[in-house]
Length: 112
Image 1 (cartoon, rainbow, N blue to C red):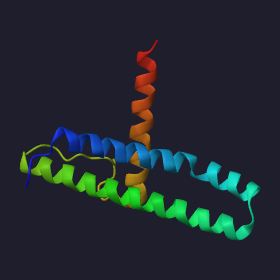
Image 2 (image 1 turned 90 degrees about the horizontal axis):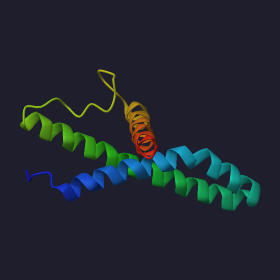
Image 3 (image 1 turned 45 degrees about the vertical axis):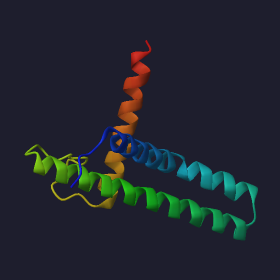
Image 4 (image 1 turned 60 degrees about the vertical axis):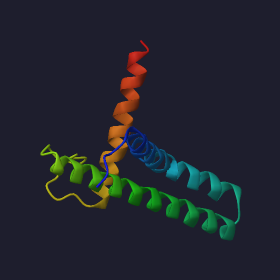
């Protein structure tokens, strides 16, 4: 297994950010589309947005598994995105969004 390069770390961070943005904007985007277009176009766009959200979530889960595997190889604590012992997909999703929001808050706080 190759070393986890800085470039890959940046990609993981981008996956997490992209997922958090999709989740946080999901309902607002659906509401806007519902008010702007007919039912058929709305359904197509909603399905595409949900598909994109699901795909990026899958990327995030793969990233977390890789980070955990590397931690295990290096005899370190697992990445641990969720506080639960046996987290499921929504648990990881919520943990990713929470981590991204906390990161953003720290960035804004540093500007004070």
